[in-house]
Amino acid sequence: MNQFRKLPDTEFEIMKVVWANDPPITTATVMEQLGKHCGWKAPTAISLMLRLVKKGFLRTEKNGKERTYFPLVKKEDYLEFETGNFMRMYHENSFFNLVNTLYNGKQINDKDIEKLMKLIKERRN
Image 1 (cartoon, rainbow, N blue to C red):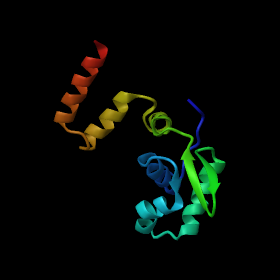
Image 2: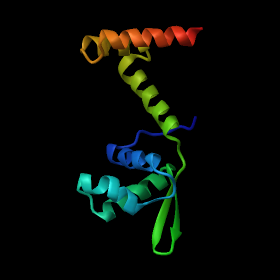
Image 3: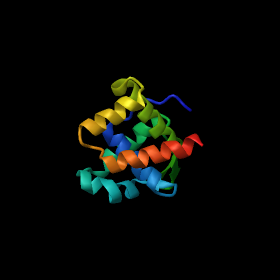
Image 4: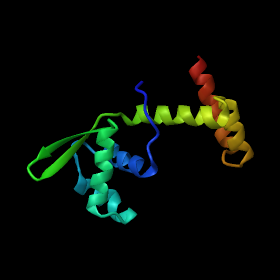
């Protein structure tokens, strides 16, 4: 897996749009699916997308007056990176600590625990 850096929330939101659509992506696609909801103007979306190009998350091509963008990072790879960071930073790399925190915080219920136990047993076999 590549070494990534954590994306700011705004850039991650753009990557979610990129991953949810077939490439290439245009600024218009981002504005349609995200920009209006966030109150962004087109220059803001363009600026954020160019940051993602510089960080190696997107590749861009100029087609006439319009730029198109292609993902260079898979969603699964980035989520694996983020999850790993989260586990190390907040749960001492312990799955037990994570589940215990969720359970004690009432964010996971007994039914979810049962499903989790079933999944673990299936994976072990």
